[in-house]
Image: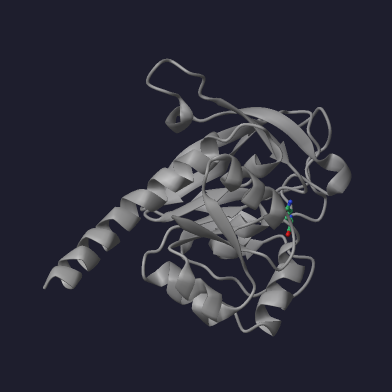
Length: 236
Ligand code: GLN
């Protein structure tokens, strides 16, 4: 299996390194035609406005939308999640082009700016092993987005209870919260919708490869369907 990793900006090398550790080849995608050579795609974290400008410059949006539309597996991490969302809020001005496909509303900088980045244990039942392995995953949240709303087709894989003393981003569309006076607020930080996966945090920056394995399993399930039909076509 060859997995494409959008390589315009952000942590694409880190994703490719994790794939390599799992024995899978990850290839950099910088041009639309390169998408023809891969059966699945990871859109990394980084800075979504910059990534969108570069994607626009390289005329990647139509090909990315088509890739999503035909049901090829795509995983967006952090800025990649923003890219995949149908709607993003919390932009300073204007907004940006999105690939879309994931029926959700994402707040781009829900948890604040760079200095408000944090790590937290996130409970992900889907990652627990049958042998009783842990369902907890160490989430690395860097200027992280959060999912505020999801549509009916979206499966919530993980949410995060924002501690009551956490100050949320002041220019967010979410009400400004004062330290020690906020009620706890639950937001969604990992979702799946058919062949699309989105995480608000950065699994590629940890030594834990379970999210990558989870995506590869998703991709191979879709890929199996595709390869068996091509075998039929070859045999005909
Ligand atoms: N909030 C950032 C953005 O808007 C994403 C941060 C990240 O990918 N680590 O692009």
